[in-house]
Image (tube, rainbow, N blue to C red; front, side, top):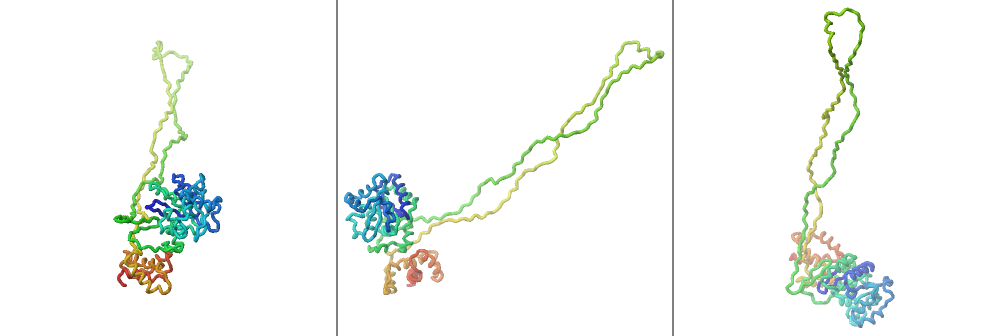
Length: 414
């Protein structure tokens, strides 16, 4: 997805209409007017005819004289997607479109002389370099959504397009075999090389003017490993009281008083004369009873403790860092020299300098890279070949000499 900070135009390229439709619906629900949104899709073989609702190019052309708003009005209150219209662009092919661009593509002001689809996209706020790539995406059947909005809504619109599945047009263009987009659709950039510095990544492009400057932070992640205490289970000890029947035998003594009367007939003895007085004899009966005394004794101890062990654990993770690579563009001091080398070695075979330019710049870039600064060509050739092959910009053997020339030029060997 590309965002033009100059015009506040946000652009997204989608693989199919359903994703684009979902994005447009969310944009409209955010408060962005349908008159600020464009949809364009390649309609080769009528793949999107079911989205047009019977509206043809003629009805759009009639409203073109009313300005860009005429195209946006098609579809009424049913939303922008309901206004998709079938068009035929000379030299390009059948498309369907909705929004102001639908009227622009049928208006006389664009015309084939102004680039047809390219002109329509540029009028919608897409920079020319990206217009080439997006037009190629439309030609290949992808769906393009552009949003012209205010600065406070631009970031929100970009997030909506991303979440709906917008593709990276730079990545897609490499899949199509033309990473720079300069030669797509037979169009070539013949303008004078700019002296402005252009800062690029896969999703943003900005042009600096005058005394402006742009800071590129070099970011590196660090791995910090700390500790925290977690519960991993343990032991719970319960103390319970149980009762069990016991018995013990004990001998108990009991006393009983016995009184007996025994008949006798004998003379009284002098010692018995004291019996002729009143008196009382009292005998007490005693008995033993069992007395229960319970005494607690400690018969076992349960010891509960913890063993503490220290262990060393190796934490493996990945950290990211950014690296700013400085690549000389076509406006560099070496470009004329590269072109001269090409004319001397390849031009007679009918070659195209634009095809070899990325190879010269690739060798120049890697020769300036700190990773390879002190290494000979024989030691880095395999690494460079592997990186070049991932770019999809041509076979290594076809451009190896150009890469080597760019490498040696920086090293001062040419």
